[in-house]
Length: 374
Image: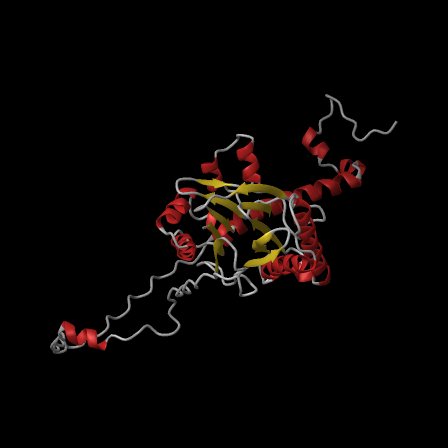
């Protein structure tokens, strides 16, 4: 067998010399030595980087602080000038001028118009036994009046003298609401001219007029895409003899005012009215409810409508009030009654009601029709 070195205890050559002998080196595997050399080189490089190069790289030359800037020369003190004399107060007032045009100033509210006291025909039947007044106002917050009213009076053999009184509150904005309320009153007027009422009960006549109005508004929406969100609420009354026959869609209202009481005759087609009816909220809470403007029956919203019908007997001195929510939503029923009791003339009473709604904020268009039995 191969032997690298042969020695025994009797050998006179020491072990160290045997290890360094040429025979030992030649018999060691060459690849093993190469591996040892590589490892030794890596160790040397690591020592070099860690203990020599890195400390040198981290050293930064010390910066000398910059010399402080030379102080600026102090100018010689100037002589104090005498303070200008203050002119008298009257002179200051004389120098004041108006603010420039670009300064925002509150817009001046338009004045309230005079109430209308004649029907659309301009002439009242000679034997009619009640007085009328109608007024529509833009309010204080809107630029456009989307409300509309119309008062129609005529005479027939079946009814004698009668009147049809309409308040429409347009919805939709951007002039679409104004168009919807105008279509509403115009269509009802055309329906009256072509098919005048000829006797009680009047529910069918109301329904036909309202459905014709609804169809007209829907047809306008189809041909005018910008008006597809428009609609209108409606309250109308047919007064003949001592009876008022009332129909409503939405939250425009009818009230019965006597010398000592006010009663809401119509029922709103609104969410808060439903909550009042089922006892979840009170009528006082409904006035400030955050969803008080949610209405579920509107002309122009769908093909089928919910229409309310009511009959009311009127005594001499009684008043029938038809109004948009711009009036009923701004002042309380008690305030409406107070104004009605304080003003015997229906035109002045209507004007005071509109004025009170404006004083309460005038957030919406305000429309009212008063019918007063003689």
